[in-house]
Image (tube, rainbow over all chains, first blue to last red):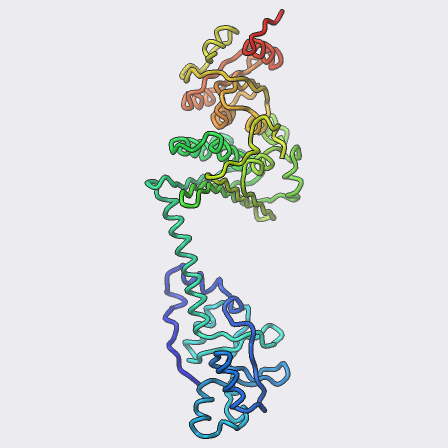
Length: 319
Length: 115
């Protein structure tokens, strides 16, 4: 078996982003899923040919569906070196195979590579069937791709957070029935977008979506947060509303104009007319909602480059 | 026609006088604030009985020219303070939404109601 350079990541003490990554990614997201395998009776020569053709450095050995060993490129080279390449796999394979399960976090694979110094690990599912193989190369590539993605995200956020580039991010915390402070972030956002010279109709759409989402939390939830982010580079204004429950039992109904679960006194203030979520959806270019008993999460995106045509006050608010 | 001209013509009381004397483009009558947000147009006069600070926020968001409170509903202090911050006039009248809407419609459209 070969001793490969290890992955220089400490799964406990690395940066929180990396640690989060290696716990979030599962072995199944990283492994190579289509696995060439051989049997103990195959010759080392046939193994060598498959490895060369498929660019593999190791191959699981199966008995039916059961994993019984692993044979590596190193084994092939030693067999060649000793003129024993026509012998069967059973004479060369490693029988004490350390395996990983497909739903283990990637951190397990990294610490296994560190601990056992193997270049690859077969991956089994919960029924102990072979579903893939994971190499240090797979791990490095997956990490590189994910780290790239994270950096892009941070760069975008940095642009959005940078007032000098006109982008901004505002956040507010709402509390149940706190009508006094609700609406602040929408009012502030409206001013900031106006100052930046965005078209009044667009500014209004953002303000309406933000205000309705703030009010929704005040009226219907125990409280939550509403974040409005203007990303100049993307040309998007993203409103994210997350509350802490109790959730919307019937999201479809809540999106129907006129449907309301608000109490009489909330209605007497002019809210809870069952227009909130439909209003948000109407003014947004993208609208996503999910809700369960832990809370409701709404994401509304408005594009600053293309003007949605349907938000004219004269269209009667039909959605 | 500006907000102050309209107030004078129709004898409406101005209870919040730190405002931008804007052009009144039209009017929208509603007590449902979500409906106002969905349907009121920029520069509309907002005719309503919703006499509280959230009305100011909604008026500001839709770019209303001013707020007209009907039926002499009392206007709370925090509403006046919010309107001063947003420089939106608050007008008040003892008449109902229906009557005020009719008079303002006639005025803005150059009609002469017999009443």
